[in-house]
Amino acid sequence: MAIRRNPSSQRAQRGASRVAGRRSDSARRARRWSREPGAARLATPPRDKVLLVFGTRPEAIKMAPIIHRLQRSGALDVSICVTAQHRELLDQMMDAFGLQADHDLGVMSDNQGLTETFATILNRLAPIVRAERPAAVLVQGDTSSALAGALAAYHARVPVGHVEAGLRTGNAYEPFPEELNRQLVARLATWHYAPTAKAASNLLREGIAAERILVTGNTIVDALHHICERIDCSRANPRSRKANTGERMLLVTAHRRENFGNGIENICAALRSLGDRNPDLRIVYPVHPNPSVDRPVRKLLGSHPQIRLIAPVDYVSFIDLMRRADVILTDSGGIQEEAPSLGVPVLVTRDTTERPEGIEAGVARLVGTDGAAIITHVEQLLRDDTMRARMRRTVSPYGDGRAAERIGEHLEQNLGAGQALRQAEAASGGARR
Image 1 (cartoon, rainbow, N blue to C red):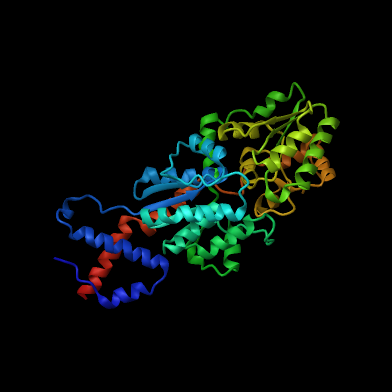
Image 2 (tube, rainbow, N blue to C red):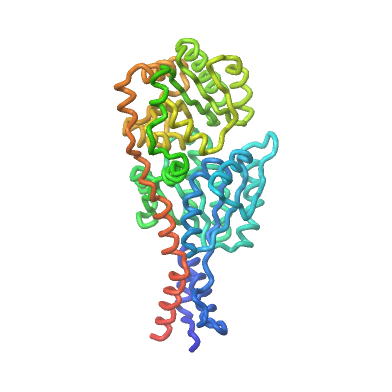
């Protein structure tokens, strides 16, 4: 018996929110499927599709566990669109996690600015969203790829899920442009996957409805667990192997836009002084390929015998480097989240951080880019075993490794064929009544 449609119900659905509109679309697809010849012989209706948009190394790391979770389940179709904001670094991560892009925008070109990058992503992504007709678009974090992905989805009236939502410094220019990118994505998102309770509180203060926020933990902890299975992070900490030599290792990364210029130069000056003052210290620095980082770093540090400048390494190798470090000096947000799970103290070369949980837990410290402050804090940690032990807590404030499971389950509950059929059945029952 054909399902009769309720005109008043349809009018109400058209006036509902974007989420309700997309769910209504899913229900109509399910009703059409149920009327097709031979439909009763099919095991399941067509699956809804999730389009995941990302383009940088950190985004790939944090999206990979979600992709794996959705692919294992099979309840939703998965389509991957990479923008390639970080071409080589992104490709490393895709290989490390066994990911294959369905669409590659290849947006970067020489001397491309923020506005040009954003415009290129949006122009190339919009037709893909129209062609794929996803039930939802998933973006991560605070990049131009995340903001353009959310805006392209909004233009197509597709719900947006924001992974790692709610991080804030309160200063629109620190980090720049990431802080404002996050706030703009929050205005466009339908679902907000907050990594911590503090991030969820930030969203609530901005007027986001509680029912649209889910505290999940950070997927970077999931990714770290995945990699640790390959390098056996549970074995005796490799730092113990250096006890007989007395050698210490400082691992350094720096790439934030707000540190370009004087910030990078101050960090490099501090590293030279640390090498000169501490003959037992080995400094390892995987240098970001951005010319604003690579050129000054190699000019200022390339000749120092205790400083090893290396090209960016694959994720498995980098996790092993972190495990072997005595201290990490970084401006990276992801490393602030990873290091606590590995029991490595982190000194953050920024004045503010959108990840205050590590600071409050005592596993990280803000030191800024003042050279004297960097030297003081690094040497304190190298010489004070008690202080270093306090910062080597192994309980991460960023999650339990099940964030991807929570996100995947939420998407399936809100988008899957089962949801579509329930919508169809509800509409059918209403028509009969």
